[in-house]
Length: 420
Ligand SMILES: *Cc1c(COP(=O)(O)O)cnc(C)c1O
Image 1 (tube, rainbow, N blue to C red):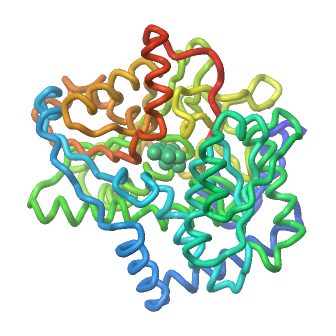
Image 2 (image 1 turned 90 degrees about the vertical axis):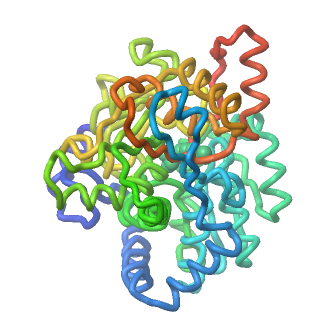
């Protein structure tokens, strides 16, 4: 059945976890009790001071939070504005993903689960999950397509060192989509003992909300840190793959914007990956160029053809290389609360080089998209104060960027491992 037919039939369903027309729970019937259990557990935990204290302690002493909000003078001067970087690259494991995997692992403890599973494409979410499992004593299995395992061998080594079992998936295109199917199959079978950690604000309800709540620490810290300097931002930029770092930093600003007059609102800009260019069809810009449909258990914008078949995504950055996007972003787009733009591989690589050269910071290629989004509109923000979510560090991308530069600066045509 095509995703459009499915969504047409089920859009009016009164399931929890809708953002306007987007979200829902498009999953096998057998998973509904597990999603209900998770929804109830989080509703309790989020109001339990002892849970919140344990989470805060882990984020402080294990992850290294709060991360600094760094005023970047040289790149700021180059762009002609007052630039601040929220340094998620300084988290343990080098990106924001650990905020979510640690939070969900603590919740799984509370739910008396002994085992955690995840799926991963690029390996980054798998490593963040394996890390939290080692720290909190969970048995851990990570599903990964054989093709992705080949392309991301270093992350496979990392996960195995962290005592996770990496389970190769040999069905279909042997990438993220197939790994997701296997992870869901595992969860259906082992749901009593097992929690499934989804790595972005995607999947069936309650995941989009749950993951947002765990990533919201990025935005809450940013608000406090700006207040410490007694300044207000004019705009906040973040890259959007599934959309978790973006929702995380946007969340408190979205709430504030609803309470103030239009001219007092902070502009929120999500930057997607346009890959080789939106017009080439080789991109990951689901919000910019996709249409609503059902993917991975929720109804949201995604890349699909006339028949509702999902089109493979492309981006130089593995973490943005995903054909869908979280349902809350679809709703924020349709209601105009966040503006979404997209930048090409080439623009992202130029922004990557700028940050290295001018600030001594090697960003993740994902984060370089947010920088490139700002660079393209620098004239519009001249003299303004802009915050960028620097979602991760770029050690993982150094080899790939060097390879591209050696080949004359053109991102190659071979698809990278896709998505998280
Ligand atoms: C995975 C990843 C992303 C994309 O995921 P979101 O859910 O959109 O945040 C962005 N930046 C980095 C560094 C990542 O590892």
